[in-house]
Amino acid sequence: IVLTQSPDFQSVTPKEKVTITCRASQSISRSLHWYRQKPDQSPELLIKYASQSISGVPSRFSGSGSGTDFTLTINSLEAEDAAVYFCHQTNGLPETFGQGTKLEIK
Amino acid sequence: QVTLRESGPALVKPTQTLTLICTFSGFSLSTRGMCISWIRQPPGKALEWLARIDWDDDKFYSASLKTRLTISKDTSKNQVVLTMTNMDPVDTATYYCARIQSVGDAFDNWGQGTLVTVS
Image 1 (cartoon, rainbow over the protein chains, first blue to last red):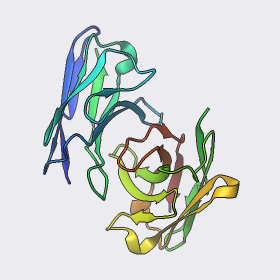
Image 2: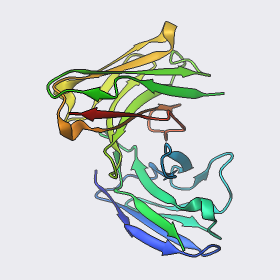
Image 3: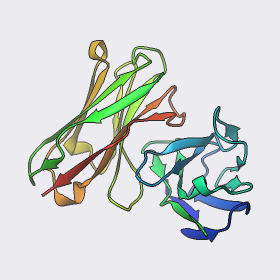
Image 4: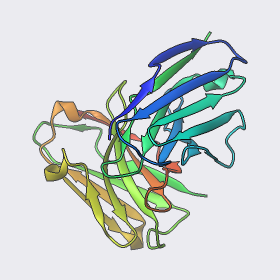
């Protein structure tokens, strides 16, 4: 299953609202997860099963979608959100990741 | 507190076999549903899932790398081992191990990663 994210890159200002999309090549129900990877760090889980929040993750992160189209929304962007964001599907093997979306903070 | 840590050689030569160890704490791989996967990331590129081992010793591999990969676990040592044969410069990447608490779930904890250069 191929996951295609858009955009590949976005330059944004603090406090802006950001939306990243992930499209699957076939239906994956809600088996879609989102990660943030800060520079030189490991990925960290932000959202699981399309919209389930994760303990300890700021509430400005939210997710939606099902089937083939998914969205990660970051409300009121902060400087620490400068990172690459990946989606990840676990509907079937092999598990796959999107190509990543790089957010630059202006 | 859940932690995972990858260890292995930083540099391997082409055609050699790579052996990576994931040492974990804060949970047991004997617990029903628990799994550990290996994922890699070439410099500046996307993540690629490689293999997974489950609490019941089921094993799963990337189709494109299946012939080169072997995953195993030593529950008593809290370790998961990944071997990759016939290494090539294109295998240069940061290799991560990550935990899943049930099949199909997200990776909720990751190791810090280990950079392996093939040259």
